[in-house]
Image 1 (cartoon, helix red, strand yellow):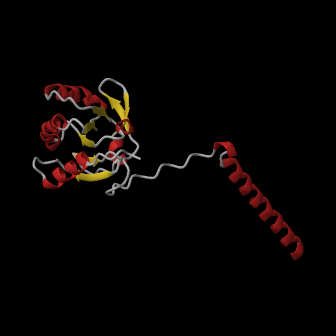
Image 2 (cartoon, rainbow, N blue to C red):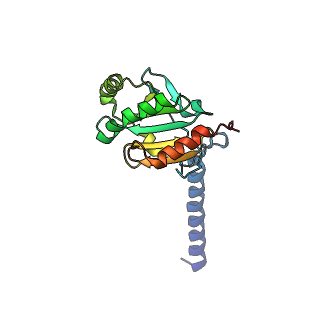
Length: 191
């Protein structure tokens, strides 16, 4: 076979492979009207960052979005029934919710679905008056960047993070009390 014939065959083969690759890429990409939405950016958890978009089901089976509490100071507490520091912290959170009516305390149980009865029993025993959400898939851990339980996040009326702790809120904690005083005294309306 002549050298020029061989080059021609190689060119044809390369063109064929290139054409097949282009067809594969076209078939694999979404149609123009079906482009996937950009994934939301992960919450950075830095002071001043806006509250993450998060929702879960409450004990009555209703979906609750944290955005429903816009315009009010919000304390989000991630916990589980098996977490002893979490259970020890809950009465303090209940007192905070009772003493500061303008503060919304939301507990998010990251217990598995099979422990829902234990969650309900604990809420009933402690007569918790603040909302408790069920998150058996532990989505809150990722949404809030929590690495441990309990995890606490205090947001101002504008939805900005003011204070956080991976661990329990201790009574008379000066850092928390100062942050709480700040969010309660700031009466500026959210923009």
